Length: 361
Image (cartoon, rainbow, N blue to C red; front, side, top):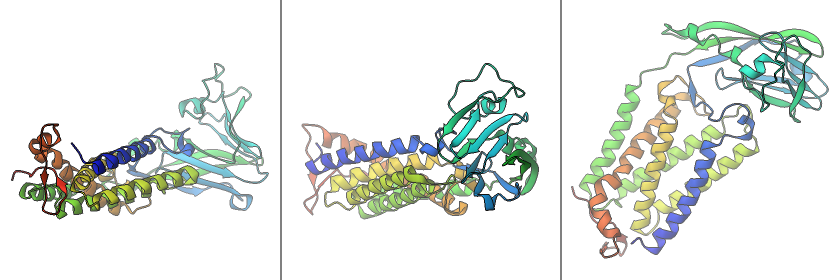
């Protein structure tokens, strides 16, 4: 059976990983109204080319989020801003007491804005029925008009402007439009990243096959690198403001850091059992993170604070090291099972640490 140190560390690691999994599958509160799983990469970018006059001076900020998925608007002070839907109907209203949505808007239903049930009186010409979305002064919503022109990018092999969009907006009664253009950025080839991941995995596998124990320094070193890589990838995703990080985002950064510190302590522990168990946990975590962010390798724009190329290197490294460390189970399974059996015995390393039985070359 595992030693007392390994059991205690396993319990701590399971708790931390469970908490990390919750942060991974549950997006921040600012995104709850928009998407359950925010995109990690895209081939499109949206550039705002013109907006209503006097926006900056009036405390109004606008930003396109996640490439071309969502629109964020912040209104401060006594300014009243109104957004119209695709049919010209009132859609959103920003004033001093919060943000409101017209539950009779066809655009609101099509874009799934808010949590309200569809109003049976969906009529773009009917008087608006306002429901408050938030008491704050900013809101993030999915607006189909931003990416409706994506099909026009088919056949493009170079970066190009595929079309322009316009959203009617008024500020204190002054009618204007928020205008922008949709830009297509073609992705690069996938095979170089798969080659990098394959070479890293092969290096870890080869080291495990030639070693007498998975607790050898090269394997633990690979786990240390994987821990740092995943740590950076996750924090970079959390700090990618959409468009604000917020308290929830910083809390998740803190939780990610706690998990990272626990794993580093496990990899540097004096017990070989703890080091090997932690390396396996790191391998599974790295593999999961790499698969979760796999779209970074197949798309041209990574939605993270890291430059796209750096993010792609990190994802490829996470996949390769994760797959390699997973071989601790696949290669060592014949020796691990007898060691864990109640009647089995465990070998002792020259340094006094208990170790999982030797791997067969």
